[in-house]
Each structure stands twice: as C-alpha cells, then as structure tokens.
Amino acid sequence: MSHYPKIPQYVHPDFKNKAIPIKECGEALVNIGAYSFKHIIEAPMYRRLKVADALPHCYVRESIIQLLEEAGQHLPAGYRFVIWDGYRPYHVQEAIYNDFYQKLKTQFPNEAEKSIKERTENFVSYPSINPASPAPHITGGAIDLTIQNNHEEWINFGTGFDDFSEVANTAYFEQKREKQKLTDHEHTILENRRFLYQLLSDVGFTNYHQEWWHFDYGNQWWAQQKEKTAAIYGVAKLEEEV
Ligand SMILES: C[C@@H](N)C(=O)N[C@H](C)C(=O)O
Ligand SMILES: [Zn+2]
Image (cartoon, rainbow, N blue to C red):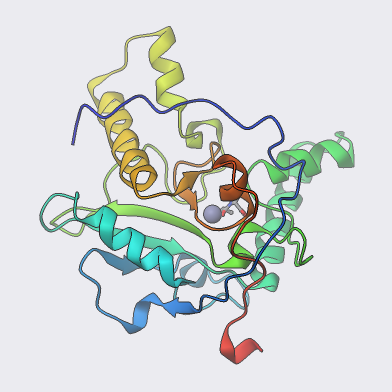
C-alpha cells in the first residue's frame, strides 16, 4: 500500500462561508448493517460510545455504497472499509457538538464564546437542519471510516476515531515530513493516510482536511470542493423518523 501521491493541503477559500444551492436528488438512505457487502462493514461508533439517540446501524445514501464498493476493489485481499458513522440524526449531531463545546469551555475557561465555537467547529459541524445549509452528516452524504486488514484489525492512521487534535489533520504527517525525518512508524501512517485518501478521491469523494476519517459525497462540502453548481443531497430523513 505504498507510493501514493502526497495529500494536497489546499482548502477552498470559501470553505464553510458559502452555502452552495442544493438540488435534492431523492436517493434513499441504505442501512449498511442490513446487507452483506463485499468491501464494506459497519461499526456504529456513536452507539458504541453510548451517545443518546445514536442509531444502531450506519446509514448512507445509495451512491455512497456503490462508490465504496468500487474503491474497495483496490483494497488488498480480505481488507474492508469500516464505516464508523454515516447519516446522523439532528439530536446526535447536537449531542456531539455540545459535548465537545463543553469540554473546550472547561479547557479554556477564559476564552470568548466565539473562539470556543470556532474551535468546536474545527471538528464538529454546527447541528444545522436549515434546508439551505444542513450539517454534512445530516444529509447522509458524509462518512467517517477506517480500514480493517485481513485479520480484522483496524489499520493505523495515527489517531483513533474523533481524536480532535492536530494529529487528525489529514496532511499532518505530510507537514511533519517537510520539517523532519519521519520514524518508520510515522511513515507507515503517512502511507496509510495517502492510501485511504487516494482510494476515495479516485471514486469521487472529497475529504475534510481536519479529519483523516471524514469524507463527503453529494453534499455542499463536496459540491464546493468539486466546484459543482449544486449539491445533490440536502437534509435526509430515515423512514422511521418521517
Ligand atoms: C464529529 C466528527 N466525527 C465529524 O463527523 N466531524 C465533521 C466535521 C462533522 O461533524 O460534520
Ligand atoms: Zn464525519
């Protein structure tokens, strides 16, 4: 899994400042846990972490399954994408946001609200269900994922799920490498990140630069990075929520 290109450090100048129009395509949400896919399994992390109202399974829009299966053809034999989270109901997004916001308030007691909010939103989107600017996971067009090897072990990407630190930045080890020689261990992580980034980029996903595990397709973050005139996924709803 080596010799993939360097992870670019480009961030769109309007990122998060401009809401791209949404032309909802109406694709359904698919319950990953209800099917047996060749290259995809689920590990619903917020449920495991006992976040209130977290779903027992991971749901994503239909095209995301197709794209992951396509990308999965390039995984070594026996490796699989492990989906940690996909569609996120409003109350779950709100709970994750409030939890991290409160942690930061405790960590930085003298810092202004605005700054704490900015720090929070580096890692957790504001829980918006505004139809013109929904949070990425609320559209069913965002995934958090890792890869498991043929021994069913999660491969090393340098941090665990929702490690809200600078090490989570997708290009962290690219930047470190520009300043100093990486250890063999760090070099493996760099190669693993390049591998995941390349596999998913090749089939059309975009990555959130602050989190190596977060990728988008069809939502506004994706549309902006891809310079599309419109996103295709707006606020999603599970049938049981409608
Ligand atoms: C909270 C984390 N897993 C995540 O998905 N972050 C992005 C930025 C989000 O909340 O949209
Ligand atoms: Zn995410």
